[in-house]
Amino acid sequence: RERARRQLREMKGQPTAGRFAKQRRDSAQVQLLEEPVQSRWLPDDFEINEEFPLPQANDLDKIALTVRAVRNEAVTASAIAEVLDVTPREGDYYASAAGYLGLVESSKDEEGRTVFHSTSTGNLLDTVEGDERAEVLAEIVDQVPGVQAYLEGGEEAVLELYAMDGRVNGTTAARRAA
View 1 (cartoon, rainbow, N blue to C red):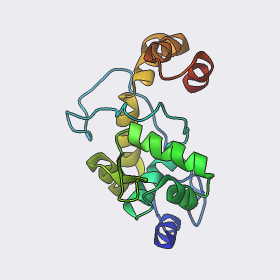
View 2: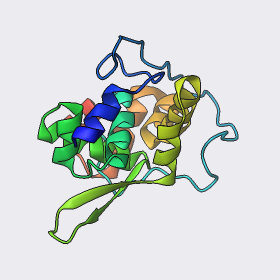
View 3: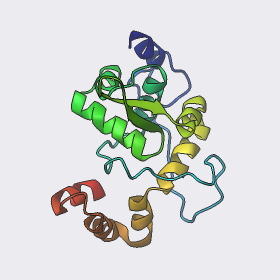
View 4: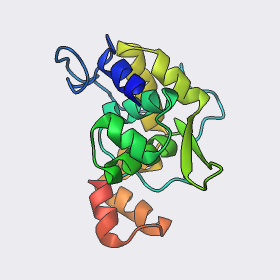
């Protein structure tokens, strides 16, 4: 874990909003695509992994850093939380969000704990920097059903989508749609 923390602190050229950088840098600007285009980065069979819960994490930089942490052996939600310097509950939120976005997968270890592993898309995200990293994130976010619903019909469409999903109640749907 200390190795993962050190590597996160040493990240250079990647937007981190100053959290783990030696000097503050602005976050990458992610711009949603108005119309679907051929993906430059994602494989044709890329899909959002809806086996994970609807994301509660809201910081794409931290989601990307979650992938970095997992690749550096912080493979449980509590280890991720420790590396990101967030609560264990938030560590679980960020691990789940990374899973939902297809950046990590989960399995059970020999002790029955949920552990996370980087996917090929997660590995790709962790190896690109700057504008390319922002492009990868934008292409991933553009695949999120809630984002697609928002682009087609605004917040009401997202609320309808989440209500039909059945995994969250109305209050939770409103929070996630916001």
